[in-house]
Length: 331
Image (cartoon, rainbow, N blue to C red; front, side, top):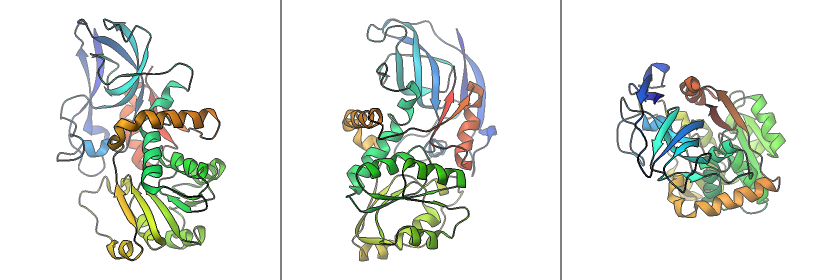
């Protein structure tokens, strides 16, 4: 049997392009005992994958050149020699960008029937949802009446952070890159939302957070983060989740040095990776599922159709083309 695969053809210098990817057709081996053949249904494209395109030490190994790229995906078992994963089972896991793949089942999680659409296990009930849940509740620990600011608030993680903060009784301010996204955030219940492309960020944040900032969930870094630091209250908490504003920079940008502001306000700044909480993931999925089924959490997806559109959907992340979770529907 043959399958199409998408490989990393070259390492990008600055912003990635379509030339960094290559399509190839591979032969798949016949199944051995204890293996399954799975057909990819949905593929997740995520900003963190940009870092894996570079060489160098990080919290996760880089993608290998001339090998299939891998990431979160939902697949259907179409042939099985593994009793725990019969034919027809939907699974989620870290899978190669291939139409079909063979697995020994390790790392695959069966999806519960009927609790939510299958693609939600790549967003609301997957890595982005867990990132929002643990980053906000474990690090920021928002209290009723406090002000929470979320950058990248219309992204897969940010819009869930804002909704969870509202569940906890906080006042929520989000930043996003278009008037349409700002309107959507307010529809979700954000108290204030700012279009960072058209607003004077320091002035707009000061107006939106007149009592200062108690919690900041940082997805983007850059000038937005610089402006938030000027508004921090005493004993503020910052969850450092992402820095997408600089992911495609060839050299690390120089900006204000925030240490004095953090010191004067006794602010806690903590970077984190969702895998830090791996042992607690079942707790997070359980609570997120309950909130979703109670109507307290809404999911938003930007769905692109077609296996051949995976690279384009990934590149679109860095142009702000998605609202909520960027998903590719493969089959």
